[in-house]
Image (cartoon, rainbow, N blue to C red; front, side):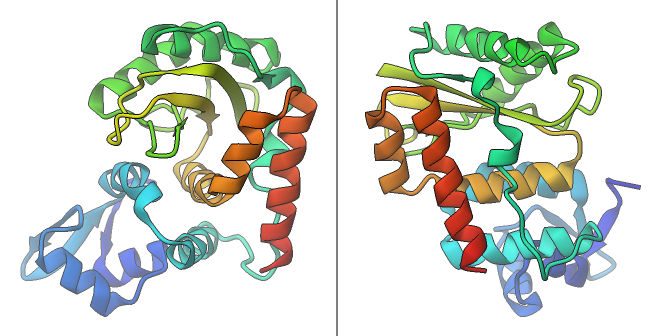
Length: 239
């Protein structure tokens, strides 16, 4: 049952937090939970949506703990790490000069880019899901990057999970809270919620200021992918 309710202890383990900190935040109304019979309960679907929106606000230690917590709760070993993000990116899914000038055209072009990978089954369905997600809340971050993704994982939309990268050199307004233009777009398409959250956590870690600057400066898709591969290898090596 992927969307069963979680207890406070379950939630704490899932997001890699101390249960006492979780209780304090829940008592202050900072977490997506409800009190039932005097005990906090957390719906997994609401937790997934909350994490999607709050991921970029978490510090490095919290992101690391979140990755480990999700890996553990999904039955994966936390002793070994992997290239979670860059193994999902192929060169055919990268466009350093995405031909888009508006929010709507960015989403259309990103889906078209995903379609070039040969992995996409339902381009129209994916586009609709992306549009609906952006209507809820923009996926633009304050650093000139956006992470468009469906509200919920879509296991039947593609042959396998994928990430595509589009760069709009001049940037466009994509709804960032900082009101700055967005230049880099990472389309994320996962099949399961735990994998989706792991990918988001790792991607936020990869998009440190120096890596974003590098992705904006290089000219080719090969160079863009190499920056991310080297950055993720460093994360794995530091585990």
